[in-house]
Image (cartoon, rainbow, N blue to C red; front, side, top):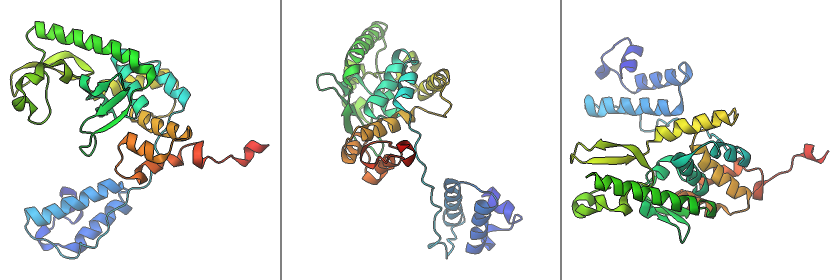
Length: 290
């Protein structure tokens, strides 16, 4: 709103209307060269200014189109690059990254797993309250069964140590803490990747552990990418993109991949057909025939 007023030489916004809003948005797009999301944010802020702050809705903006985000292809790592990165991540962080790649999880979905969300017998990982507040089930790779089993034993030992020290409770979702008061101390609800240190919950005064913070894995992943000699700006989410693309290259159908990723619309999953080098959309370059 400050930039809007400055653009119009601090004129009274109550005396301006749709024409001034359009000229400002055009200035942002043409001269400012801002992204589509910034344009839309500015549009929403000005609508809020007039409708809610000034209580003076302006006419003529109903048909104003929103800026469209350009289609960006995801960064996909090769199988060799994935191996190089995972080989340079150790301990809990390495296991978390392996679960992300092995089951197509987002970074928050992996770090917010509870011990009860792992089914070793069925080799399944249950993602609770994922994007869009949806639950889904994905795979636990065979190669991770024993590492996860050993990790669960370490988590259980750490939990026993916390209980002996008088702590051992964990933050529960929604209102479960009041509905099932003792569940906060149950092993089933403990984080699969607990943080190294405790914190004091301001709401209940308990000394608890949170899960490993996203930035810890992000920094370790960035360092692993650098040490692997990979020049591309890969982030942990690239493991999810690589999971989907590699499945597509192995011949799995798009609907199966959609279900494993938890996409609401298959069109979201279809983006990976643009980056897969093999599979149903694979095309052989004429240069390779020489």
